[in-house]
Amino acid sequence: MKIIAVDNEKLSLETLGRTIHSVVPEAEVKCCTSSKEAILIAREMIPDVVFLDIEMPGMNGIELAKELKSTVNPKINIIFTTGYSDYIETAFMDIRSSGYLLKPITASKVSEELENLRNPVEVKGRNRVRVKAFGTFEMYVDEKTVEFHYSKTKELAAYLIDRRTMCTNGEIQEALWENDDNIDHGSYLQNLMSDLNKTLSEYRCRDILLRRYGAVGIDTAKIDCDYYEYLNGNPAAVNAFRGEYMTQYSWGERTLASMMMK
Image (cartoon, rainbow, N blue to C red; front, side, top):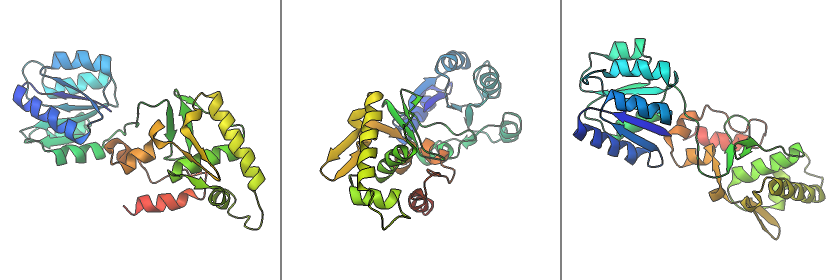
């Protein structure tokens, strides 16, 4: 997540910057003391969220918000941080801001706003492999969609990512062929595992697959996944969850149910 904080009062800005870092330590945060500086940084950075003071010399926060939305990104989440309630109607009716915080700004207030952004922020990480579990399952390597040779191979990858641990062959068979209890799919599963290994090798990410006798798993530290970020309490991931999880797989309903109970 990319965030810009703007306040002409240096002490307030430093406090706000530290508060944002405490809530989302993985975020890239830039702090600006003027509207002019904020515009220059925003055009280069393309932020997801801007925490913005209103009463500032020169171009005030309302004017700056309009400028950012018109010239940088209309979907920027503007969260006003001010000591005055006078601008609430303008903020929401004219600017369509994401939030409005009255000073003093606390970590709990920042966290609540980031969890309820008007425009959800895509969860991004630093690994080459990225997985989208919310909605339908997809895997990406270097931001390119992984094309699996067979739909069942894709389902195997999805299941291993869902489980987050080593899975036995029996457990996998039970999940992937839940309606065929009386049929042994052991040979078919071995073919799927070989195909998954081949696919990951083609995308040069074979190292995410863990194998041991009778079991297989995914190295969760080597992939970025919205579901994992959700479990870690990442506000962007929490906000991105819309009640849908790996919808093409019936076994995903168990995980979805546990998420809905939280």
